[in-house]
Image (tube, rainbow, N blue to C red; front, side, top):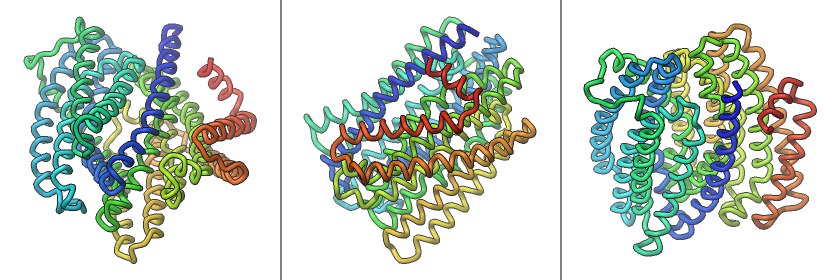
Length: 505
């Protein structure tokens, strides 16, 4: 137990360092691209990310399934079965890579029909999409090898990989923009080179930490393992497709109806939201491996205790952060992207509403995935994704104005809350009875502290109106600390306070 707590501390420290690096690079990366490419050209970049998201449906689904089976084998000491899992996964990745390349040629040949892209940027867009898709293929191999690190609860090593990825992408982009040409195609090429470097680093980590115990061989390919992983992967794929219909469809619709400029602005705000998600993941990501380990050992009391308390803590902290950012949305966009982007402040605020529910629900999702109960959540997510798409496409048929985009984002937020939190809470309750009331009460507290933080942040913004990055940073930090103090006094139980102290300690 002492060794386990020590590793959690290492994971936490590495999360903090990775968070700092990711947020700094994230804050600099989007304005850098917009400055040298222009908003219209930059508007194509989020579209490539959407295609990556759809292809990542398969890779994330696959690695999620593999993680479950591999982790259970490792913690039961069954190294032979763990080797079969990884070896079978490598074969599956080779097949998925072939599918990726087929999709790449289809998408590139039809790119001007799928998206609204100016003829001026068409060739560069094709190069961007080609290298982005090839990057996904490389990342699949890295992801399979990194499952072995995750199973060992070495999130510190995974953070090294994640931090290296975002640093290398930025460094390569800067190099090409300075010494070759400022063109969107080099964003895709930089992604590819970064993923190639990450694959080499992942191979190195695998050889060092698992190479002696885990064997990789085509001869170890096992049909039984393949079927087990394939069945779970199929349902997780369905789940991820529904996710994309909730979380990424807004950019595609805005691009098709309103054009590259609006999709570029929405893409930049969506990127900012993803950086904020990194912050809330600082806490919530620590508990995925712990839940899997507890499940593997049959300690179900610990599983549900972690799920309830950690989801609550993660949700409250995310509500404070999201509400404060929403309150300061005008200042954030003014300082980060410039005065011309202040008009999109409501978009940023709407994106933040789902943050606490996403953070809390992420912890709960680990529970039913550990139990391999993925079929029904996948079907419901798919239905929610379909309903969301139907509604926002219908809205897009009405008069094309900025109000319609706000309505689209509002519906996306509503469906995100239902899917990310309430659905996950419902299925955890199906496994561990009499927990749903706890999660409902928690959600009301999330909503209250988000609204309180928003009002507090808005008052602080109008009172002081920070005009530069230093003033903004100081105001945000002070506001978050004050709000955390309020939450600590009134919203956390004695047990929650004890756990927070342990995490900080």
